[in-house]
Image (tube, rainbow, N blue to C red; front, side):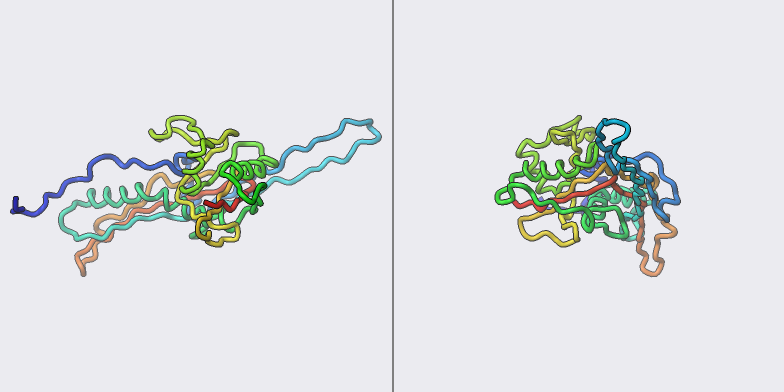
Length: 277
């Protein structure tokens, strides 16, 4: 049948359902101070050095004890924004604002993962450009389990709480295929977390796979990281421009904007392995 009229505009069907990734694995911390978007944060952390063993002996032969300072952990801010350009006719201000906010909500997780993985846009502490590279035992033909074990052995030699493996999508899929991760909660309804046998949180997402000296991975390789606990703060109220502030009266085009600030950082140490596929 011939089409006699133009297509009929309708709303996008269905809700925005995010994939598993950094937001679900780590959660979003409560609280946001507007000053953080300017100067970031610093955490005075007491967990970045383990207790030490000590030999019980006679009082005249007691050994000296070691005392260390606490660690200042920085978190510098960055912003994620979405922009839409459109003709000024056909949508109300509220509709324009909903559309640009939806674009931000749907895509910001992947942007945050990419920024954190490479310390882009002034973000720190991130992954590439930091951390220590690990030489995996059995380095001739390492398995996925060898990589995971090397990461956990290095972190947990000096760190007590559960850490976080930041896995590229390629490596995350292989961890699941090799039964190295199990669901803790309802993964597919947004309330669960993938964990290793030791309980390490596994964040799988849009990580860049760059090296600890910020070099791009070569073909069939990725750098995968483990860190101490990782935290995400974000401004709960995105800035959304008004129609009056977004209308270019020369071109009669609307360039509407939604954006918000983030701080992402992690505790104590980071380690990385060069994985081969």
